[in-house]
Figure: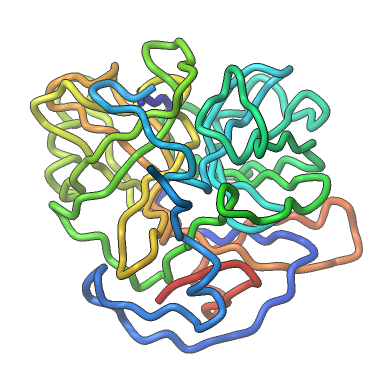
Length: 307
């Protein structure tokens, strides 16, 4: 899988979702959490399983939340299904165009060149990039894609769980990144790679060498300092997921990196816990706004969250 690309945590508000406030206790360790009873049977569960550099091919149904975001019918970026009508991806995937009619989303398959049933191709109704994203390696590289209509969930199409804001993905936690990209060429078979979380201070020190890029608060690093394994072009927007109990939870969104699988240049991801999606219907088509998390109570919309 190489990736490309303010210290403000932010909250994407998506019109049309109902919400309810909750009080969430701190979660000091990623393995300690509880799923709501209903959602525990819905999100983050792999189906029956029988271009990442250094990765391996996945089995059918192994990562059922993985989607291929397609531009004019060709694989462009990765993404993850977070609800029947919503996909989470990277904002930089829409630098060329934000025209929904040029995009589609392929779900329910690990083969993106020659998909077959139960694969589904969904039309895109709306693209919602973070308006605070500044381009390239800036913070805020996150976006939502609204499908024209909800997809039917199956054992091959399952949303990924999203973590509560208090969940911490500690250094050395082993997680998985998935995607179809490798050296700018999209592969047929979805690839997977296990990567450890890297401490924020360690990653920041590595990237301050040379080009002196800063690892900001809404960024998360994972990978190997020795190089050789990483996410690559075509994997952008894809999920970094970690196992928590019996379910998988999305920790990051593939965002950027320097080169591909280079030494002392681990992959950089958008930290999902820096963002929360809530709904507000202002009665306007342009009611999508981004607001600091600090000014809102913690809210959980009707898609899977864990705490």
